[in-house]
Amino acid sequence: MQSEKMCVVLLFGGMSSEHEVSRVSVGNFVNNIDREKYEVLTVGITKEGRWLYTEATAAQMADGSWEELAGNMACVISPDRADHGMILFTPEGHVEKVHVDVVIPVLHGLWGEDGTVQGLLELAGIPYVGCGVLGSAVCMDKAVANALMDAAGVPHCKWVAAIRADLRRYPLGWGLDEQVDFSSEASLEHALNAVGAYRDHVVMWGDGSARRELMCSDDLADACVYLMENRNAADIGEFVNITDGTDILLSDLFELVRDIVGFAGHIEYDAAKPNGTPRKLMDATKIRGLGWVPKVGLKEGIRDCYGHTFGTMTQ
Image (cartoon, rainbow, N blue to C red; front, side, top):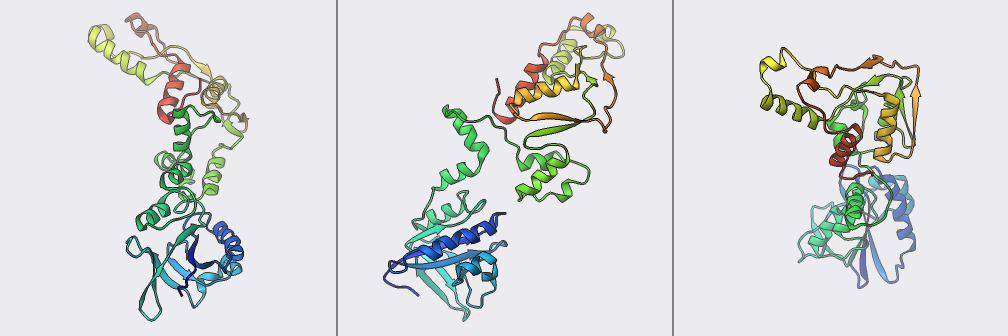
């Protein structure tokens, strides 16, 4: 298999949702690399994560039939720098080492562009084409990339990170969570659309005319500490409402949140859905009579919560 030419390994396929795209992309290399100068070896990675050396054509790679070819051989990139290459497991049960001069990872998405394959090649001491481990990992994780640009003062667009872990931690309900494929951006977007979250707009139930009171959790804690330190049971009585005593139209609240997070889209209302209770507001007369008043305004509280949660602040 080995010759005096420089040995180039093309990695394609992979386990990400962009597997099929990679199979097409690799054809550009297969069809255009100068075979007079380079010995080209192609290694396909199946969606299940199997590494197979293959002599498939570009067309077979593109349509996926390469996986069924009789001549395919299981293989691995050896992390042992003494090998500086690939290990093939032949059908006869033999192990064959192949020296590799350079690897071109023609992989898209996770486990290809995120620093994982690059880390393996760094361990193996094999040169490769493309970004290094850190650059690949940072660029793949858009939240990290944007946070670094914020820290460095690099001008860029407003952003907010909505990560898969959030959807796992806070179920969507309506049976949608069981239908989500967390490895697929299209599946995630479909689930978010189902609850009214789109790229350019959000859909709210009702017409926005209901009113609600809100208060910052810091104020709630402050009120509890104030009462424990300054009042006794006789002052407080059976119960006391801890409240600001004001409310806001839901339509105004939604616009306030939209402005704080920097969402450029618009808000739509689905009047066919219920508004809910027209108004929810507690009486603040007693708590104010006891000498406590809230300190955190609604806008300030939402902004602080948003900044703490997502690590970015929209002024």
